[in-house]
Image (cartoon, rainbow, N blue to C red):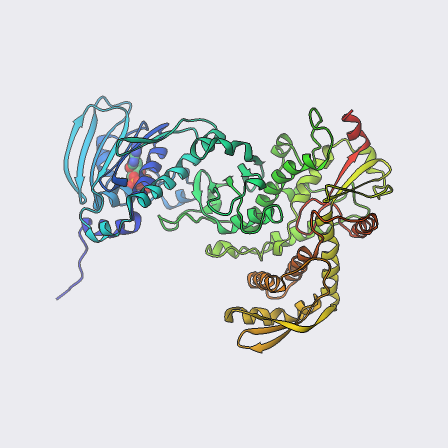
Length: 621
Ligand code: ADP
Ligand code: MG
């Protein structure tokens, strides 16, 4: 006897529903996305018992014809795509045609809907995938969907729901995502007859303020970069607004909320040293890309999105964030009366950056007000990395910066050098910008001096990183390091999985001055340490950071890894902001900096030096 048969639709839908509808918040997400796709500008949400009893979404979108209204509940029924190629040009949130079919498999649903052109609307009642009634009704234009008794026919699921508070907070999270992606749409949320939220349509900044708090708007730094690969706008939080818990962190791509651990890491890197360890910055970052270059066709409940050419976008994102932070930082570094002073622009203005395309194309390595010799290292590194294949797009789970230059970030330079072209520095271009004046420390952080025709300011910590980095990197290239022998070596424990990673980079670490003796069982004695400068360094932590860096490195030991390791050590050893320096120390530091090929941007891509030309100064008087 044959035993295989097709499952009835109601059973198949219920199985599918297990994937799409996990909790009331999933229903809210799907219904809100449908309303947005239908062009709604006003959306009302009504809940009872955190959605267990009732989830109702009322929109003023385009509505459905009676036939479409019936069809909408069939599995794989959608108006949004016709054929497979449409998947690569998606401009809608939905496309699977699964949501309504799934919801109706596990709840009682009533829908009223009317198109503008129809005189009467239609009301459908369904439960457990079965149509119970369909009739004409008078109703406003748009769609009104009530979902009652979620999981009434799946007791195990119903039992699995968490407390009302948890379910409600999940719902609000979904609403936040949709509301942040669509600031021009108004939303209200009523729970157990109490209005919890009213969001009026407005600008993104207004939406953020409405959703979070009024104070937040003062802490937002605008992001604005337009580029062939990706357009980035939105806001990042000032470093001072970073928090240990509950930071507001949102990425959107083509107005769809996404999680992106790799891009998240890029943003965090930009804040390194600007915020205390363990705290997190706020960000609201909106990426616009060609829909053909992303793949949203992953699991319906997942918010990770695959990008083509991810490392390049990663770099542009970092450059954009650094630019925004740089603009913000540039002003207070110069301690003049700010009342009506023109801003000292060290980075492109909004207008200028609008005209920017791929940084690579416009980078002019020949011009740099601080440069004595032409530096080409950023450009070639950037080119190198552009040609690397993207591993990350194959595998979303782990952020991986290894392909992207091992943490070295050149594009800031291209963006900024473009800006520099616009600055009235022409007469300075011919000038030698080597320091000639005395060295004065400002706020225990910056070194001020002058050249023949300009005031020069250096960030002492960043300048020192650049100098040390160069030294450590040379040591690695020459395969010779100096270490300080320890009388009583510190013993460190390395996780079993990391032992092979560490073993692989032992020679590289030795060029940096680490002498490690394997004691077995994952224990190592640090018999020699890099000749230490002033800072108290937690070598154990540093070693773990280096192992992290090496673990990410898919190519094994490479130049990129060497650079990364050298950078980590330089960051740990460099003189801190806040440290008093005497004139001689400052002179030595600036001179060593000028011995480097590149002295405007550090190996981490951050700005080291700012010049204020005679004409800039003139403008201030
Ligand atoms: P998808 O959104 O993936 O197409 P759904 O099951 O969510 O699948 O919806 C099926 C179809 O029902 C949609 O393609 C759309 O045509 C229609 N629809 C759903 N919700 C609405 C709505 N609020 N307003 C207008 N049409 C809707
Ligand atoms: Mg949908």
